[in-house]
Length: 188
Image 1 (tube, rainbow, N blue to C red):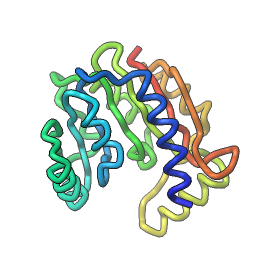
Image 2 (image 1 turned 120 degrees about the vertical axis):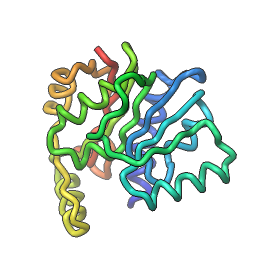
Image 3 (image 1 turned 180 degrees about the horizontal axis):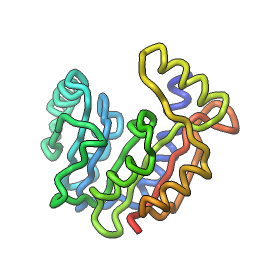
Image 4 (image 1 turned 135 degrees about the vertical axis):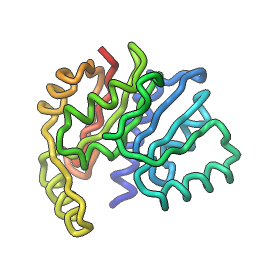
């Protein structure tokens, strides 16, 4: 089941990346985990910076990057809410999961926007207010993590309020209503 969910999300995400990612770009990724997106993106861009909250995951990612021979990735310990240095801007920002745990979506999206160069792109996921989303939220509560579910309409409106122009959306999940909402946007 998890593999099927990930496959659909990857199809949408890589489809979006085809329209925005260039080899000379710098990319910031919040919540890279084991590097599912990090490794393929690092091969297709000039520079990446990852920000991971878990030291264990960060160490795993560093090992994986070393095994892959990828030297254009800088790993940092931190959270989305910590924001990056205001003088540092990126062509693109990827956040595939961290916004699931952010109570104030506008604040989270504002942090993403702040890290973008003018006209820069972002691709994010948020969990949906659907039966699959509620099941995901309950599962995460068992692990003592609170998930904040959103509707597609709310997500698009909050993105606009945060200064992002939504340029594409998609849903991934096992049913037609979906589990996660994948959003591609540009800094307005």
